[in-house]
Image (cartoon, rainbow, N blue to C red; front, top):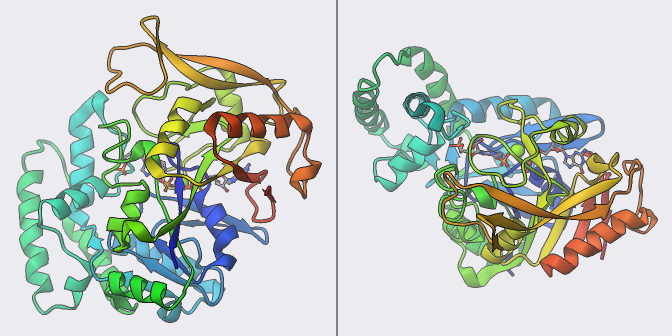
Length: 423
Ligand code: GDP
Ligand code: IMO
Ligand code: MG
């Protein structure tokens, strides 16, 4: 057996949660491999909208195991809140939600360090979600971090205190940055107790044994390729590998065991936070997309920046991830356009660029567009792809031709049912 991977090809929020939920009936295990509560994955069905941050998006399906892998960073406070929100749905977490002992913990001081670091950057801030992601991954690679397995050890409190002491030393250098650590610690230790009640596993053994036993596994990515620490628009990125390779390190799966790679993108493009975005629309068209697509962050509520789809960017993401099939999301949002633009390449100082340059600081990147006919109608009631308007089919076929990868899913609304399968 192989591990299939589903991940975002743009700057996050492509609709990963929705499609993982749709695909879950085909799998036995859904596993998150990186990121943490910076993620906000939305699922909608039976008139209810759920937003998950740490818990994998397969949690609503009976008999499916959800695994939080070693590559994920966990904030016990947010995790406990997520569990509480799911209480009315009667999910037996002790049988369905497994946590890697090697997953790192986000401490209250990691969140403070994130806030202090962003404040000190002024106009150069990353636009982080302020969930403590960067400082936690820094402690992981700096070999100072605390892991889920540590919470069961007798010296946990000592380890915690030692790390907090280090953090406080750094925080003291941020002049004028005020905080109340004691107030944050109470809920954090409560969250740790809750975490202890869930099965903590050696997840790399767990997942490889599952593969041996013939279990079907889907790895769920967080963020998107352009936010990857190595391949994204650095430094305006997150602190983990969001790409397919992150599945190997974030779950302990060998590269030879990767199967299908499903890349998700919106029929347009969005970004939340700072950093380059060549096709961004700062005019009323961008505002129209934002309103129609309800483009406000699932985690922070911030308005998302909106723009046209960007082929050089998508080709790059397909290359890095080895994408085998595509899901195109939110086609319904473009339902009021006579014409739709697709960026085919960029011009910088009059020179043609087919991929994003190393650094665009101080450069004007001009996107060059091909104009396609819009479908200009409501897609949200469509029940099959064959019924869809010719302009939508032309758009899909154009993208397939340019990207050289089949689009197998077209999404026309937030609900589970608003998903058109195209073989
Ligand atoms: P994720 O982080 O990739 O899981 O995506 P988010 O949940 O942050 O953002 C996607 C948003 O778009 C959510 O509010 C979804 O409910 C919504 N959504 C997903 N697919 C569609 C779609 O096809 N059409 C519309 N209109 N909304 C969608
Ligand atoms: P999902 O999984 C969109 C962005 C932040 C910021 C940058 C760094 O829902 O697609 P961080 O808190 O990670 O240090 O922030 O990354 N970012 C996301 N943008 N969707 C996400 O997750 C994101 N997670 C982080 O806005 O620009
Ligand atoms: Mg999101």
